[in-house]
Length: 212
Image (tube, rainbow, N blue to C red; front, side, top):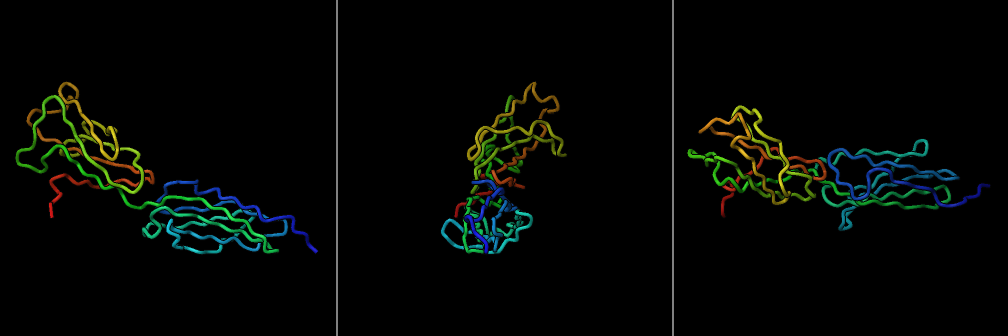
C-alpha cells in the first residue's frame, strides 16, 4: 500500500498579495503531492464573507492556472482568493491571498478655473493654475494635465500635478510657451490613473454640479 508522508504542497504565484487588478486576471501557482492530488478548489469571497465563485481548478504538470474576466464589476472591491488542495488520502492544505479588484475609472472634478464654455473665458498673462479633486475606490497613481490648442496640438505637458485626491498644477505661460498667441483660447485635459490602471475618459467641471 501507499504511505502518505504529508499534506499537499500548494503555492499561489499570481496574483500578488494586496495587488490592485482589473479586467482579465490570472490565478496561478503550483501544487503537488507525493501520492497525487485529488483536486484543487478555488473560492473567491468578499470581505463580508459573501462567496462570489467556487470552482475546481485542473492541475497539469504540477501547475494550475485560471483566467477570470472581472469587467462586469461583480468582483469589484476587496476579494480573498482562497485555494484548497486535497490528496488521495483526504489530507489538505489551504492558501489565501487578498486582492483589490477595481474596474471603474476615477471620477475627476476640476474646481479651477472657475468658468467653462463661457463667452468670456478667464484671461491669463504669466501663468495658469488648475485645481481639482478625484474620487476613486483605489489609491491614485497620478494626475496628468496637458495644455492644448483647439485643434488638439499639445502646447505643454502632459505634466504630473501636485497631489492626487486633491491636486493642483501651475503652467508658466509668458516666455515659457512660445506657441501662445495673444488673445487666443486654449484647452486643457486632465487624465487620472489609479492603482488598478483605470483612467478617466472625461472629467467634470465645478459648473457641472447642480445643487438639488
